[in-house]
Length: 148
Image (cartoon, rainbow, N blue to C red; front, side, top):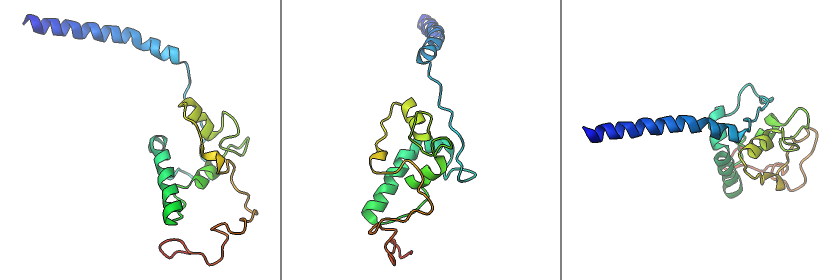
């Protein structure tokens, strides 16, 4: 019985101390969650917002591997699709300044963006032609699975 009361007392004390310290950790952080504008290309994202926050990097890596290693080109989880929907109205980019879509969240999470060494941060112009030799510019090329 004495052990039970002791355990209960310690539990109550830890709960009280935790309740007192919790506001300190929130106040010390002092960083607001980024406020991002809605996507402009579609009425909703290709996946649920919470799912994308947690898994977009895995989807992009998987899409990259399918494209580079297997020759499968799809649009559902492509980086190009993300850029087209999420480019800022102000800058036309997802990574031109700290308020832009990718930079805002990655800065908040302290995660380095290394996509833009190879990929464009702005949507392609509709009239722009693909350079000769680009996989999508080669006439008659087929994707894995036989689709043209």
